[in-house]
Length: 437
Image 1 (cartoon, helix red, strand yellow):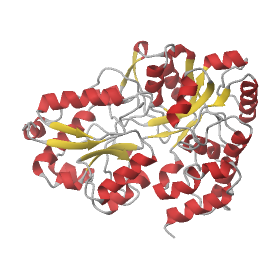
Image 2: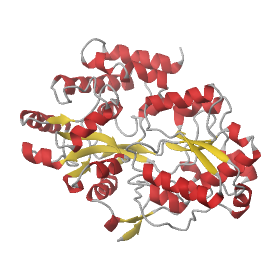
Image 3: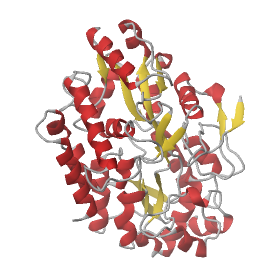
Image 4: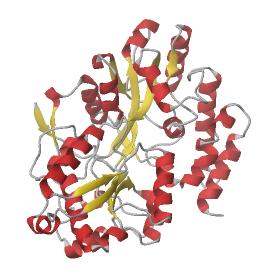
């Protein structure tokens, strides 16, 4: 069964699953290809397509196809997306070791690259290559908060949801959460699962507390307000942050996280989930492929909504188009690399390629993407249903915090949940760092 998908963002939902191409072509414009087919160029490329990312394999295949077609080479330094990866990329720019092409985050994480003139705007690229990113909706390209210009070309967006191990729930005598499940009902589920001898929630608070941070504070806001940064822990938005983080502390104190949640890695807690020892996992749409690869029976897993409370409906999601391909100024100033970089990005962001990468996520394609539902796993189709039933979508507010500003909350989560650090103090410290005061 094939059908076109509509894009949802700022009022429209977009879900595009792996499928065959649309009107786009995986090849870039012929004029650019003539300049890029010299076979003498080696591009340094850094992306987040690595590790358990759903598209790690697609990325490797696409790079191999492009190098074979053009004769150019790729020096790849992709790594799993986390705070360490972000810090490494920032350091590379600071030391003059930045890549030629970077697949990286929009928003605050890339602000300094824009402010320092180290990445090239799409407007400037189009002066020489007028068809660059012409298959994309310009208003979906992720304008920089620094100057309002677009710098990156997105491939796929994301959603974050509650992955479920159905076997664990069955053993515990619990039904999977639905669109109508409240937070209080979810807490009761977690208690029942714990008493049955299983870990309710697979999460490393030491390494990736941000998914729970995002949804617990979302539970004290709504789609219209979630992405607004507080000025302090005492204002309306700051109080939502404090209340949400206190809910994480409550989950920890009730024993709903793994016993080693303060020391375990994300991969260790993920294994709890895929080895039938933990019931729930909040993660992004990119995790679908990782779960498919890690388990023998994918029908044992599904994804649903994170239970809500207050003004937030459970069907309100965290999601958006948060990353894209950048061309660095260092690369742009090299005529041979410039042509190759443009060609590479046009290849990676064609309609056909975006359809392969999209997963259960948003795209900015003018023509949309197509979905072959019959060829997808039950988990992937559950992701389609998740988005189709969403009532609203909000970007992750953490994307508005600098890497340093996240530390008081994320790196300090162990102290927070153990009561060694006041939540309000951590929030104020983060906001102070972010404001540069």
